[in-house]
Image 1 (cartoon, rainbow, N blue to C red):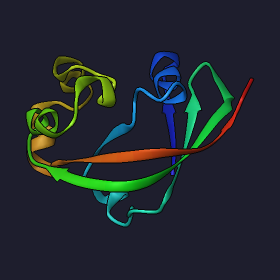
Image 2 (image 1 turned 135 degrees about the horizontal axis):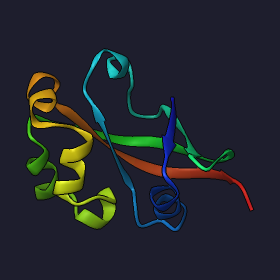
Image 3 (image 1 turned 120 degrees about the vertical axis):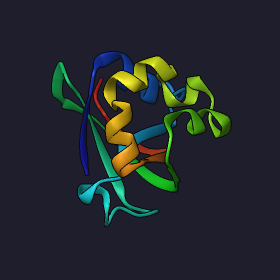
Image 4 (image 1 turned 180 degrees about the vertical axis):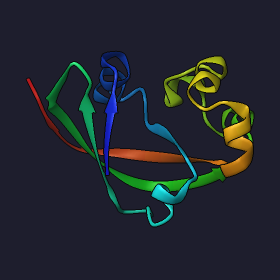
Amino acid sequence: MDILLDDLLFEKISNGTKTVEIFLNDEEMKHFSVGDTLAVHRKSDKEDMILASAWSIKKFKKLAEIYKLYSEETVGLSLDELTQVYPQNVVKKHGVLAVKMRVLKANYD
């Protein structure tokens, strides 16, 4: 699975502080499972990429529940910032997945 992140979040994954990526639990994520690979691309330079493996996936019905298990630092966004990405009505309909990642390889200088 390919994901595109802004430079700040890309750097947080690169330096090891962001280890959890949040996804909407929609049809696209239906077949995503532990062991699958994420290709994380830098928005400003899509050639920069980090390969990561999903080694834990947790389902949540509310965004606030994520922060009971994971710190803001490991998610890379505050609850308010995450709410801007995933509005409450969308989360209520689908739920979200917190994917704990392990970096496999970085492809950038």
